[in-house]
Image (cartoon, rainbow, N blue to C red):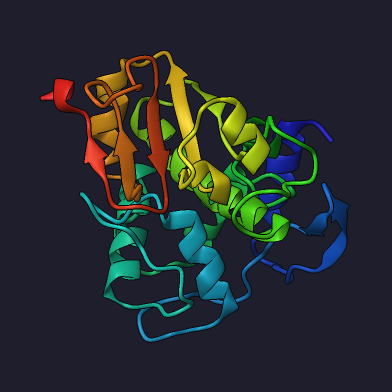
Length: 241
Protein backbone atom coordinates (compact mmCIF):
# COMPACT_ATOMS: atom_id res chain seq x y z
CA UNK A 1 0.00 0.00 0.00
CA UNK A 2 1.43 3.44 -0.85
CA UNK A 3 2.54 5.40 2.20
CA UNK A 4 -0.05 8.17 1.67
CA UNK A 5 -2.86 5.63 1.38
CA UNK A 6 -1.58 3.78 4.45
CA UNK A 7 -1.62 6.98 6.51
CA UNK A 8 -5.19 7.74 5.38
CA UNK A 9 -6.25 4.27 6.42
CA UNK A 10 -4.53 4.57 9.81
CA UNK A 11 -6.12 7.96 10.48
CA UNK A 12 -9.55 6.45 9.86
CA UNK A 13 -8.70 3.45 12.01
CA UNK A 14 -8.15 5.60 15.10
CA UNK A 15 -11.89 5.36 15.80
CA UNK A 16 -11.70 1.56 15.88
CA UNK A 17 -8.33 0.74 17.49
CA UNK A 18 -7.08 -2.77 18.00
CA UNK A 19 -4.36 -4.26 20.17
CA UNK A 20 -0.96 -5.43 19.02
CA UNK A 21 -0.22 -9.10 18.42
CA UNK A 22 2.94 -11.04 17.66
CA UNK A 23 2.75 -12.07 14.02
CA UNK A 24 6.17 -13.26 12.97
CA UNK A 25 9.93 -13.08 13.29
CA UNK A 26 12.34 -10.48 11.95
CA UNK A 27 16.08 -10.73 12.45
CA UNK A 28 15.60 -13.55 14.95
CA UNK A 29 13.33 -11.57 17.28
CA UNK A 30 9.58 -11.26 17.67
CA UNK A 31 7.91 -8.80 15.29
CA UNK A 32 4.74 -7.17 16.62
CA UNK A 33 1.82 -5.85 14.62
CA UNK A 34 1.33 -2.11 14.61
CA UNK A 35 0.22 -1.01 18.06
CA UNK A 36 -3.17 0.71 18.45
CA UNK A 37 -4.66 2.36 21.52
CA UNK A 38 -8.16 1.56 22.76
CA UNK A 39 -8.65 4.30 25.35
CA UNK A 40 -7.75 7.90 26.13
CA UNK A 41 -4.80 8.07 28.54
CA UNK A 42 -4.19 10.60 31.30
CA UNK A 43 -2.55 11.04 34.67
CA UNK A 44 -3.17 8.27 37.17
CA UNK A 45 -3.57 5.52 34.58
CA UNK A 46 -1.21 2.61 34.05
CA UNK A 47 -0.73 -0.33 31.75
CA UNK A 48 1.05 -1.60 28.67
CA UNK A 49 -0.70 1.01 26.52
CA UNK A 50 0.79 3.76 28.71
CA UNK A 51 4.20 2.17 28.23
CA UNK A 52 3.78 2.14 24.46
CA UNK A 53 2.77 5.81 24.58
CA UNK A 54 5.82 6.66 26.69
CA UNK A 55 8.12 5.06 24.12
CA UNK A 56 6.69 7.31 21.42
CA UNK A 57 6.81 10.56 23.43
CA UNK A 58 10.14 9.81 25.16
CA UNK A 59 11.76 12.36 22.87
CA UNK A 60 9.88 15.17 24.65
CA UNK A 61 10.95 15.00 28.32
CA UNK A 62 12.37 18.52 28.55
CA UNK A 63 15.91 19.81 28.85
CA UNK A 64 18.46 17.32 30.25
CA UNK A 65 15.66 14.93 31.25
CA UNK A 66 14.84 11.31 30.46
CA UNK A 67 11.32 9.91 30.59
CA UNK A 68 10.98 6.58 32.43
CA UNK A 69 9.29 3.87 30.37
CA UNK A 70 7.44 2.32 33.29
CA UNK A 71 3.79 2.15 32.24
CA UNK A 72 2.76 4.72 34.87
CA UNK A 73 1.15 7.92 33.59
CA UNK A 74 2.48 10.54 35.99
CA UNK A 75 3.40 14.21 35.80
CA UNK A 76 6.46 13.65 33.63
CA UNK A 77 4.52 11.61 31.08
CA UNK A 78 1.81 14.27 31.00
CA UNK A 79 4.47 16.95 30.40
CA UNK A 80 6.01 14.88 27.58
CA UNK A 81 2.61 14.43 25.96
CA UNK A 82 2.03 18.18 26.19
CA UNK A 83 5.38 18.91 24.52
CA UNK A 84 4.65 16.34 21.81
CA UNK A 85 1.31 18.04 21.12
CA UNK A 86 2.96 21.46 21.03
CA UNK A 87 5.55 20.17 18.57
CA UNK A 88 2.83 19.07 16.16
CA UNK A 89 0.41 21.95 16.63
CA UNK A 90 -2.17 20.07 18.68
CA UNK A 91 -4.17 21.36 21.65
CA UNK A 92 -1.37 21.34 24.22
CA UNK A 93 -2.59 19.53 27.31
CA UNK A 94 -1.25 16.40 28.98
CA UNK A 95 -3.98 14.03 27.80
CA UNK A 96 -3.37 11.44 25.09
CA UNK A 97 -6.53 10.93 23.10
CA UNK A 98 -7.56 10.45 19.45
CA UNK A 99 -5.64 13.50 18.16
CA UNK A 100 -2.38 12.25 19.72
CA UNK A 101 -2.90 8.71 18.48
CA UNK A 102 -3.75 9.92 14.98
CA UNK A 103 -0.48 11.84 14.84
CA UNK A 104 1.48 8.85 16.18
CA UNK A 105 -0.10 6.56 13.58
CA UNK A 106 0.95 9.02 10.87
CA UNK A 107 4.52 8.87 12.21
CA UNK A 108 4.57 5.11 12.77
CA UNK A 109 5.45 2.28 10.41
CA UNK A 110 3.80 -1.14 10.65
CA UNK A 111 6.72 -2.46 12.75
CA UNK A 112 6.19 0.26 15.38
CA UNK A 113 9.28 2.22 14.37
CA UNK A 114 9.02 5.87 13.29
CA UNK A 115 8.67 6.41 9.55
CA UNK A 116 11.99 8.22 9.09
CA UNK A 117 14.19 5.53 10.65
CA UNK A 118 14.63 1.81 10.04
CA UNK A 119 16.17 -1.07 11.96
CA UNK A 120 18.70 -1.51 9.15
CA UNK A 121 20.06 2.00 9.86
CA UNK A 122 20.62 1.07 13.51
CA UNK A 123 22.36 -2.22 12.79
CA UNK A 124 25.10 -2.38 10.19
CA UNK A 125 26.90 -5.08 12.16
CA UNK A 126 24.88 -8.27 11.71
CA UNK A 127 21.36 -9.51 10.95
CA UNK A 128 20.67 -11.10 14.34
CA UNK A 129 21.24 -8.25 16.83
CA UNK A 130 23.27 -10.76 18.83
CA UNK A 131 26.74 -10.65 20.32
CA UNK A 132 26.41 -7.42 22.30
CA UNK A 133 26.13 -6.79 26.02
CA UNK A 134 22.41 -7.63 26.11
CA UNK A 135 20.19 -10.19 24.43
CA UNK A 136 19.35 -9.75 20.76
CA UNK A 137 15.72 -8.99 21.60
CA UNK A 138 16.73 -6.32 24.13
CA UNK A 139 19.21 -4.71 21.74
CA UNK A 140 16.58 -4.49 19.02
CA UNK A 141 13.97 -3.06 21.38
CA UNK A 142 16.50 -0.53 22.67
CA UNK A 143 17.10 0.52 19.07
CA UNK A 144 13.36 0.98 18.48
CA UNK A 145 13.06 3.21 21.52
CA UNK A 146 16.09 5.19 20.41
CA UNK A 147 14.52 5.73 16.99
CA UNK A 148 11.53 7.50 18.53
CA UNK A 149 13.89 9.93 20.26
CA UNK A 150 15.69 10.44 16.98
CA UNK A 151 12.34 11.16 15.33
CA UNK A 152 11.71 13.89 17.90
CA UNK A 153 15.18 15.33 17.30
CA UNK A 154 14.68 15.22 13.54
CA UNK A 155 11.38 17.08 13.82
CA UNK A 156 12.90 19.73 16.08
CA UNK A 157 15.63 20.29 13.49
CA UNK A 158 13.15 21.09 10.75
CA UNK A 159 12.44 17.54 9.55
CA UNK A 160 15.71 17.40 7.65
CA UNK A 161 17.38 13.98 7.33
CA UNK A 162 19.74 12.74 10.01
CA UNK A 163 22.24 10.10 8.94
CA UNK A 164 23.26 7.30 11.29
CA UNK A 165 26.86 6.24 10.71
CA UNK A 166 26.90 3.62 13.49
CA UNK A 167 24.29 1.99 15.70
CA UNK A 168 24.23 -1.43 17.39
CA UNK A 169 27.53 -3.28 17.54
CA UNK A 170 28.35 -6.79 18.63
CA UNK A 171 31.49 -7.14 20.68
CA UNK A 172 33.43 -8.18 17.58
CA UNK A 173 32.11 -5.23 15.54
CA UNK A 174 32.88 -2.85 18.39
CA UNK A 175 36.40 -4.16 18.73
CA UNK A 176 36.97 -3.86 14.98
CA UNK A 177 36.25 -0.12 15.03
CA UNK A 178 38.19 0.51 18.23
CA UNK A 179 35.11 1.09 20.39
CA UNK A 180 35.32 1.23 24.19
CA UNK A 181 34.48 -2.03 25.95
CA UNK A 182 31.59 -0.31 27.76
CA UNK A 183 30.25 1.47 24.67
CA UNK A 184 26.49 2.04 24.60
CA UNK A 185 26.57 0.72 21.04
CA UNK A 186 26.86 -2.74 22.60
CA UNK A 187 23.39 -2.24 24.12
CA UNK A 188 21.67 -1.08 20.95
CA UNK A 189 20.64 2.25 22.47
CA UNK A 190 23.27 4.47 20.81
CA UNK A 191 23.73 6.10 17.43
CA UNK A 192 26.46 8.18 15.83
CA UNK A 193 24.89 11.00 13.81
CA UNK A 194 25.94 12.96 10.75
CA UNK A 195 23.75 14.73 8.19
CA UNK A 196 22.64 18.14 7.04
CA UNK A 197 23.04 19.90 10.41
CA UNK A 198 26.20 21.10 12.11
CA UNK A 199 27.45 18.73 14.80
CA UNK A 200 27.08 21.39 17.48
CA UNK A 201 23.50 22.07 16.43
CA UNK A 202 22.66 18.38 16.81
CA UNK A 203 24.56 17.97 20.08
CA UNK A 204 22.93 20.98 21.75
CA UNK A 205 19.42 20.18 20.50
CA UNK A 206 19.73 16.53 21.58
CA UNK A 207 19.73 17.72 25.22
CA UNK A 208 15.99 18.37 24.88
CA UNK A 209 15.06 14.97 23.48
CA UNK A 210 15.71 12.31 26.08
CA UNK A 211 19.31 11.31 25.40
CA UNK A 212 21.26 10.62 28.58
CA UNK A 213 24.62 10.34 26.81
CA UNK A 214 25.69 12.99 24.25
CA UNK A 215 29.23 13.36 22.91
CA UNK A 216 30.17 15.89 20.25
CA UNK A 217 32.89 18.24 18.99
CA UNK A 218 35.56 18.71 21.61
CA UNK A 219 35.22 15.19 22.99
CA UNK A 220 38.10 12.96 21.83
CA UNK A 221 37.27 11.08 18.64
CA UNK A 222 34.02 12.97 17.98
CA UNK A 223 35.04 15.68 15.54
CA UNK A 224 33.17 13.99 12.66
CA UNK A 225 29.93 12.90 14.32
CA UNK A 226 27.66 13.29 17.34
CA UNK A 227 27.09 10.32 19.61
CA UNK A 228 23.71 10.03 21.35
CA UNK A 229 22.47 7.24 23.60
CA UNK A 230 19.54 6.50 25.86
CA UNK A 231 21.83 4.99 28.48
CA UNK A 232 24.78 6.63 30.20
CA UNK A 233 25.13 10.00 31.92
CA UNK A 234 27.71 12.02 30.00
CA UNK A 235 27.36 15.33 28.12
CA UNK A 236 30.58 16.49 26.50
CA UNK A 237 30.90 18.79 23.51
CA UNK A 238 33.31 21.49 24.67
CA UNK A 239 33.53 23.19 21.28
CA UNK A 240 29.78 23.83 21.21
CA UNK A 241 29.51 26.71 23.69
